[in-house]
Length: 297
Image (cartoon, rainbow, N blue to C red; front, side, top):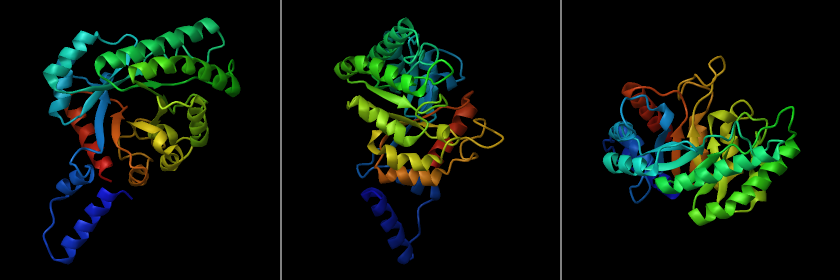
């Protein structure tokens, strides 16, 4: 348990022992997601495709800011022009914390065709430059896919080879390449994910830990201590039997209190981005509220 959380709990116990009135639950929850300096431990964001409000990128980001979100994640290749993003940030006051590699599923680093792998690498490099130009810090990457044409070993070797080519560019741009755990037949185990990241042997590489994606394979809270400090960012979604990813946050099979307890043990501080069905303002308001409740659990 980290020191700020111990202090928070100690203060609560002391107040109760002295018969002092406690603050409202909402204020206690808010305090639990702050560092000793008053900054947020976990900052909440959404993927740009979730924002179902009309208008320009600046309009969408302004709504997110009004609803209490701390940032947004864009896509690249194919994302907005850097000048448009810069203007949207200035107008809304909301930062872009990173981008998702938009071609990694279809143009794979693990493809049997060398030319396809090269195009996948070019897409990753484009995403690195885009994240830098947007003021972000990362690129979310699905490193490869195991299927009838690609074995696990081939996926490993090919994706490692291509990512290593991108690392010097990522280092120069100071943009992290973060592996997302997905249903791709690859890195669906936390120990394998850790081994893959360690083989890349770079401080520019880490895990983009998707909480809901692990439920099919093993409880997400078991991943956190194994990945540890390799976790650089979080994707937030739930998953429930019979509902799949349609389960609302806090209504699926993820044991959020256990997940948050493990994240506190490794002193995780950083971005958490919802990756669920979005919608208009009222839907985004609901998502923001549920994310706040998760972070306080």
